Length: 270
Image: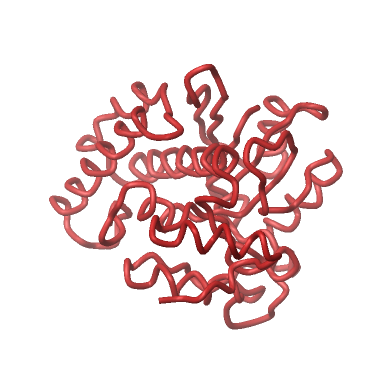
């Protein structure tokens, strides 16, 4: 099994991060991390690692189904009720925001191409199920759950000042190193985490951010495959757009019960 993480830019002219986590005898290992370009480039990357007939999960940080013309999807609203207190809510996704000049949503175009390659858009994973799936994920709530954070890490440059930004990056690198001892473990990050963030600015820092986000997406796919519904939660629905994430430890039993009863999120929010 391989797990591909994509930090997919909403517009094809912007770089996207791509990462591959390969299942081995000890858990997962990062075997590729790169920057990708347009849709042709993204699909070539997926095809090279997950040709037809090979089991794997593609986890994408971008809206993959956006039926609403305005406002937000149910997925964002449900996610905010659980993760908003951690500052981990998602930006609203609607066709006016994420559609291009022709009204196309990049994630939906990607889904159509992957379905031609025998991938199924379905986030409701059974543990260790051999499958070819594509799922929508979001790194911020995933990090809150995986790293036990009280709030999201502010590693994206939002004018918080250079010292504060670098402090958040140091914390994020530390949490990623600790995944080597997680369940499941993730190895092979040494080269990526050897990047001297203090020397990066502008596009160089953004490129590193995109690659790190892609690695987190790939790990979320490995985590979901390992634990299934026992420790993950799906907000929204396949038809209306969804977000799959490792959920809070206090919600593990509730998430599993909701999935066994045929639910899809809709679990009692805090």
